[in-house]
Image 1: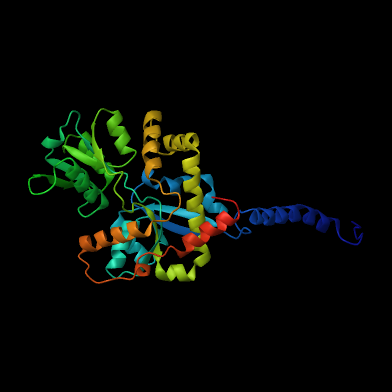
Image 2: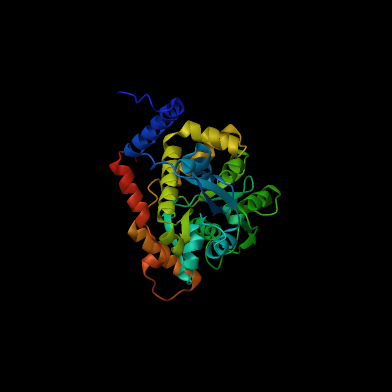
Length: 335
């Protein structure tokens, strides 16, 4: 290539530094990576707790997946009903509480569930050491009407403790961490827990009485305002891409994921490994859900919320962008 001697050496130096970066970014986009980098967008996401259940968000942030998609993610821990209220008010951009968001949509809120990180529940019923399920009188749950509550009912029913002869009292604790503390403090006979609290308790000698791993429902996902979905289409796709990448990486890289859990959640190695084993069983790497399961989940939600009106499914769930992103990733040879 012939160089024009009239061009300033400074300009040539700048071109030499910048052009390779632009070429590399363009090549990465062609090979299936994110589009050319743009300024990071600040995005707020609410989660119910800093727990292993929401590890795809925390791990994806630590791994840099969100930043690579142009997202500066701020994860806010807040009780799901309050988080959904904040979402409706426009104080946050997304919520991971897909179930609560869908129930709000059934009651008229202009919200849409966009993807699901779990379509099986990760709840376990843990009792005091040596506890016989027939002797349970008190059970700690995070809240009446919560997923934890419904999971507790389902597990106890399998144990023959459902119906009018159950003679059970549910103790509301507000959070899974408090349910765990109540169990440790001998304030209740049993508690409904999720990892890492499940593993911490069972490894510590507490009784594993049953679980809801076979119960199909939505536990964690991505919910946004319908208006946000329309106005920030590319941002939503970037969020979905980052979450899918994180889900896939967590499942495929067990040793690294366990090390991350151990460090981020201050867990003992055995607890981290056991927690990972539970979460891996229930993580939904596709982000999607089978139509019959979705219809069943929505019908159950309608009964719980006493909603009798018929709702078009697209007023509650919109998986269009999820499926668009998955198609794009597959065409580029990823996932």
